[in-house]
Amino acid sequence: EAIQTYNAKIITWMDCDLSMPPEDVPKLVEAIRQGETDVAVGSRWVEGGTDIAHGLMARVLSWIINNFAMLLLGRKVHDYTSGFVAARSEVLEKIRLKGDYGEYCIDLLCRAARLDYQMKELPYVCVPRTSGESKTGINLWDYLSKGRKYVSTIVMLWFNRKG
Image (cartoon, rainbow, N blue to C red; front, side, top):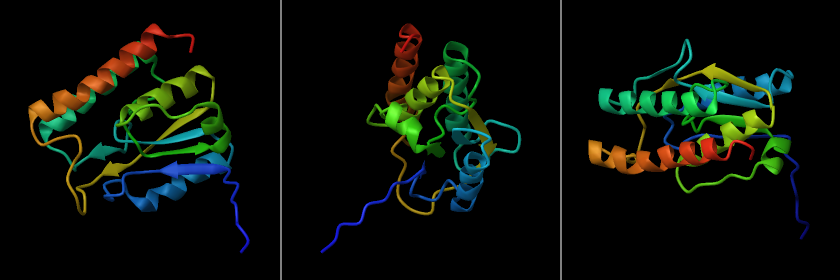
């Protein structure tokens, strides 16, 4: 039996709960195919994007984390915690994903910007999940517990500005 291999040029990922609209994936891919960018990020925090999936507390905490990241890591990205991304395969060959939760996205986007990869954010509307439960949490303690990983990732990247 022959083993078939694929050599993908563009890699995409998103949450499987459909809170990120699959119909927006072609917009991310097309931005890369047209040569506009190396990394396309679906963003809730640029004009045209929003988050209607989460309550006020979650949105405020996300806004705080993302503004903290922009303050320390740079403003090439406004939604460091997006998790809705398309990237050229070369980017992911150069930058291996680190982290066991959403901090991988903060790390990837920061290091891609530092390596001067072109970044483009495209707005999307985060909608309520169709199934499953949030890994982030359901109360303030859960959010703060998970958020500490985001904060420590941001601080470590800030201290290690050359890497």
